[in-house]
Image (cartoon, rainbow over all chains, first blue to last red; front, side, top):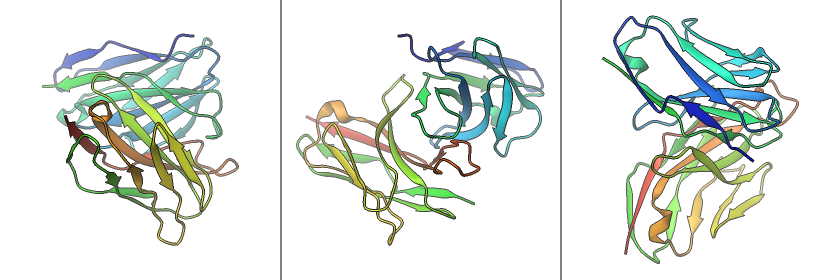
Length: 114
Length: 116
């Protein structure tokens, strides 16, 4: 069984640019959550997608948006990048959107904004 | 809002030493509590969990007990190994039926380094 994968591994962008990060969920998992982990901090919840619809959102501005596809893979898009967006972005997949099943995390994408 | 506070790190121990990493939480209601571990270059892995007061989660020699009266979930291990070196995160999430849709709220993490 393939685990959660994310691409790219590392990314460098400049302020004002746009970025798309990708996540392939574990087989059969219909729920994907995205987290932002700033250096030296714990992950912070960005949003969750369940069956292709946003199912909850944390305290992040609208320039953070996402998609989930019919195969349950997901994208995180960030527009108008700011220096503070530099972080490790983690996605996690689960069989359940209500927290009754374990969330499995990918290795993350390290985004650097210059 | 809900929050998790972990002890200040980093923690440096010698092999076979006793480990405690403190974790306290603030939440409206009765969350489930978790410890996750992050090894270098890897994603977060669930280490253990407890879903109600007085539950003890355990895995790989690590233990933590859900203490509602002190709103705590301290991580302990009797004898650490070099391979336990990692970053440890305490987290909470709400029970099914709540409105938190499985969102995890994490502490800031504690770096553990174990020397031979």
